[in-house]
Length: 199
Image: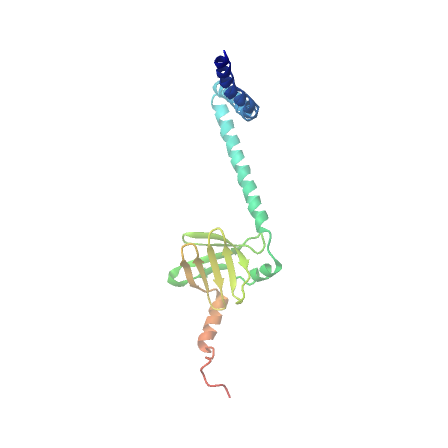
C-alpha cells in the first residue's frame, strides 16, 4: 500500500510542476491562438473577394514597408543631427561639385540640403554619406563610419580611401581652387629646411 501511494505521488509531481508553469505558457500562447484564429478569416476574405483581397494585402504590406523605411530613415536623421559647431565650420570648407581625379575618374560631392554639414559622395562603384571630423592637422576630413570611407582634402588635392579594404578609391582629385594652389606650388615651391637662409 505504501509503495502504491509513493508511486502515485511520484507520478503527480511532474504534473504539478507542469501545471505551475502552464499559466506563463498560456499567456505566451494566447496571442498565437488569436493569430491562428485571424488567419482563417483572412483566407475567407481572399476566397470571397478574389483578386481584390490579394491587392489589398499587397498594398498594406507595401505601406508597412514604406512606414518602416521612413521610421528607420528618421532614426538615422536623428542620429545624424548631433554635429558640433566645429564640425559645421569644417563642412563650410568642403569643395562641392564634380571633382576630376587621376586616371579619368571623378567624385561627385554634394551637400545634403536636409542635414547641414553632411555630404553625399558618389562615383563609379561607390556612394557614401559623410560627415566632417575634426583633425589636428588642419586637413578637411569627412567620414562615413558605416561604409568605412574617408575623404581627405588638403590645399592642393583630395583623395577618397576605403578603410575597410585598405585601398584608395580616388586619388589626386582637384577642384578648380585646388588646381590653382597646385600650380602656384609648382611655380614657387616651398623652401626646404636644408636650403640656405634667405638674405
